[in-house]
Image 1 (cartoon, helix red, strand yellow):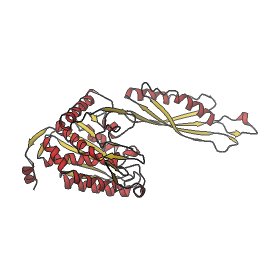
Image 2 (spheres, helix red, strand yellow):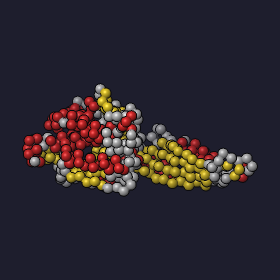
Image 3 (cartoon, rainbow, N blue to C red):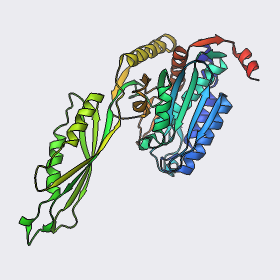
Image 4 (spheres, rainbow, N blue to C red):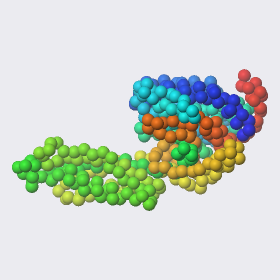
Length: 394
């Protein structure tokens, strides 16, 4: 670890340069052209700084993804980082890359381009220290996490099935930089109600309002939220009706479900699929499914956190904490297939908010933490020394 930390400190200015570069390449989830351009940059950057093999995974509708591989051996460690952001193109003009004291701000700097760059430089530090690992490291940069992984899910899950451990470079939790050892799973549903239309002034008694039925369903659904167990049901969007003087024939609700365990998500799913109309004169159609399973705090995940905590305390003088969150990430997709530790990215605040920023003083520390975890779980085969390694590569 001492050699790796020395390399990280040596490369700090270069790491900052690449951080600025990637933040100033805007990469809104819906802009395929810019995402594809950044994918090429990531591929070139990985080859330039680390070596190994890179592959552009071409996608027709969404941004391309990048798969990078470094090292060799039996088994693999998977590192995940998305490079799309929620910020529309042009945000950089009003929210430029800026350094104010210890705060570095800009669109996507915290979620999650800071973590991405830290991950690249963690591998570079291992390489520059002349350390050969016993397992290969696969890094997957995906372009559509912010919109639910419509095209990257398959590739993420395939890599997870082949991996011994997964590290996700999403931001740490709160200003403490807590690692995420649990994430709720997510379900996405749609409720369609059909009533009987009629004139609200002439024949109101002949109509049955779909909006009225939907309203009663929403009240019941929200009543199923249980903060003690962590299960939440939220109707976040509704639509319906055709005119103010018409008893509504149609009404629709879009529903978000969160749960801490697979068992609980499946329970809620079955409950939703079995819903019946409150007013028997209406018709109700439910559609949707579990979008991503939870990242549960299993024994393997707890062991990974304890390892991270030991590395942080012994080598970095940092007392690491763990957190759980209701938000989803790439880690939810890998958790069913391989032990996953999330939140290893930047320390800061303001994901998806105007005050988005990371703390410059924590970059080296987080980079070193990831490097330590990689070496621990990939295994150190040999240490050649910096000069020997550079000579070998040349």
